[in-house]
Image 1 (tube, rainbow, N blue to C red):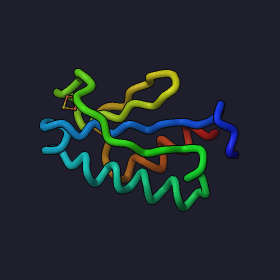
Image 2 (cartoon, rainbow, N blue to C red):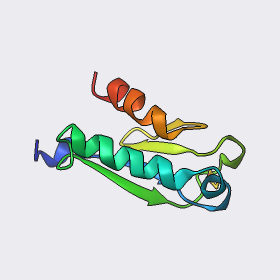
Image 3 (spheres, helix red, strand yellow):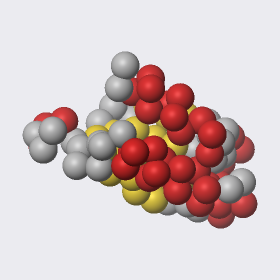
Length: 86
Ligand code: FES
């Protein structure tokens, strides 16, 4: 922890289509889950503009790597974090 090389960014698209599909709640849930896991130092949850996959929103992109998750629901945040930190 605190190692810059390991810093990860979880980008939640907050552009129109994703926002209409509750992206705000998705972002909030990611923030809460990251904090609950004590990962706030190494994982940043940010909003980003359109990721070009609007039909499958809300879309979440993880950097580095650029892996995208589609149709993310707030309750999916924990499963995604489990996958990322397995
Ligand atoms: S609006 Fe979210 S991917 Fe385009």
